[in-house]
Image 1 (cartoon, rainbow, N blue to C red):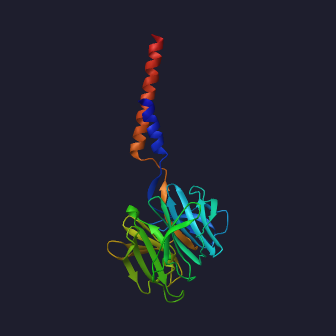
Image 2 (cartoon, helix red, strand yellow):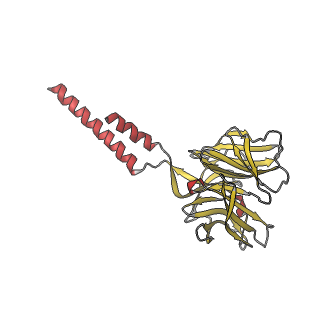
Image 3 (cartoon, one colour):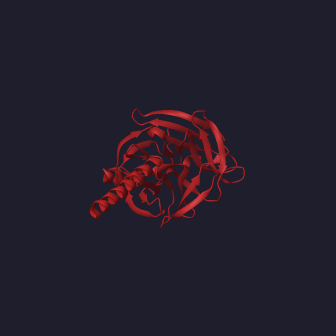
Length: 288
C-alpha cells in the first residue's frame, strides 16, 4: 500500500497541467520560443529554435509543442519543439497524396488529432481543413468555399477556433473575423467581427483561454506589438495589451506547467510518511 501511494504521488508530479495566464509563441525575427503573459503582456524567452523559421502556427498535443511552417509549396514543415528549451527536435515534411499545396496556415489540436488548414488553388487562401498525422500526412479533408482559415486554435472542450484577417497593411488596419468550427458537423459560427480593427496581422494566430480569445498583432496607430483579447461570451474586444518587447510573434498555444497539484503533493507525502513508519517498525522489530 505504501509503495502504491509513493508511485501514485510520483506519477502525478510528472503529469503536465495547463498554466493559466501564459501562452507560447514564436518570435520569427529572433527565431525564439517565448511565453506571453496574458495579463501584463510580459514576453519571456525560453530559448532558440536552433534554425530559421519563416511562418509559423503553434499547438500543443499532450506535452509536445508542434509548429507548422509554410516556406513554399515544396517546403511545408511540421516541427516538434521542446517546450522546456525552445529547440526544434524533429521536423517532417507535410504532404497530401497526389496534390500540390499552395498555402498552409493553421495548426491546432482537437482531441488527440492535429488539424491543418491549407489551400490547393489560391496561394493566399487556406479554405480546407484536414487531419494531420505526426508523420506529416494530411487526410480526411473538408473544403469550405468562401472561407479563409488564416489560423486555427483550440479552446476549452476542444472547440476549434479560426481567425481570418483581410485588408492591406498600412494606415488602414485589417478587418478581422473570429469563428468557431464544430468539426463533427462542419458548422461555422461567428464569435466576433470588426472592420478596421486598429490592429494588423490578427489572423496570424488565435487561441482560447479562460473565456477569451487571444491573437497577436501590430497596432496601426503606433506600430506596437499587442495581444488582442476578445470576450467570447460578450462578442467584444476586451483589451489590446502592449507586449513588453518588439518582435514578430506568430502562433499561440497554451502553456503546460509541471508544477504539482496539491493532491499530488498529498499523495507523495502520504507515501513518504508511510515508508518512514514502515522502516521504524522494522528496526524496532529487529532490535527486539
